[in-house]
Amino acid sequence: MDTRHALDQLVQLFKEEMTDNLAGIYLHGSLAMGCFNPAESDIDLLVVAYEKLSVETNKRIAKRLLALHDELPNRRGIELSIILESCLTDFVYPTPFEFHYSDYHREKYRTDENYICGGFEDADLAAHFTVTYHRGVALYGKPVREAFAPVGRQYYLDSILSDIEGAPHNIVHSPVYYTLNLCRVLFFLQEGIVASKKEGGEWGALNLPLQYRDTVRLALSEYAGNPSAAKPEPEALTDFAQYMMNAIGRLTGHEC
Image 1 (tube, rainbow, N blue to C red):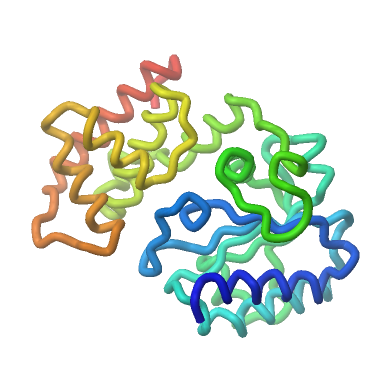
Image 2 (cartoon, rainbow, N blue to C red):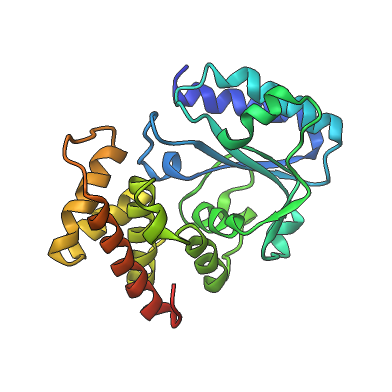
């Protein structure tokens, strides 16, 4: 199944399951921003409902997403949240969501037919809303700029800062993720641009001090599906992460 067909299948799934309660379906993330890698990327969606979904509807959606997974063109599958339309008009941070599905939760849905991830709050949604507003694609429903309002800068910043917590320790275990996310955060702070991980890395490879540029280039290569035999040493990754956290801390006015 190619990506376009996968998106058509997902739209059809939510139209059938949510019927008149479906307000919109919006694509964000790497696929919307032109840097989708089937080996590394999720298909990222925000699904908007007028009213709360029943438990049975959520269960049916989870079951159908599981069935669709093996046909998808990407290894990681789908990451989506169902939110109420009222969250777009009266923004709350952190933002409540009705239902969430992702690679992390997939096996829980598969092994427990009563499992539902929903009814909580998620700080990440501020970033998802912001990316959707600036870079997203409407697959169903109102155009993006009619459905979404700008999220306050501090909420977006708080959301993306949460992605880099503990980077000097965690970067050794997830070098591509933290390297490119650190670049994306610093890019936003310095230039005010809502960027993808790839775009953040490309900026970093041109603008960071020379001693850190190879680390970023290696992460970009691996993110694009072209891993190099050369790998940064753990000490180099930790040093890079600490430099970036210090730079981000100076611009945000507090230590990261």
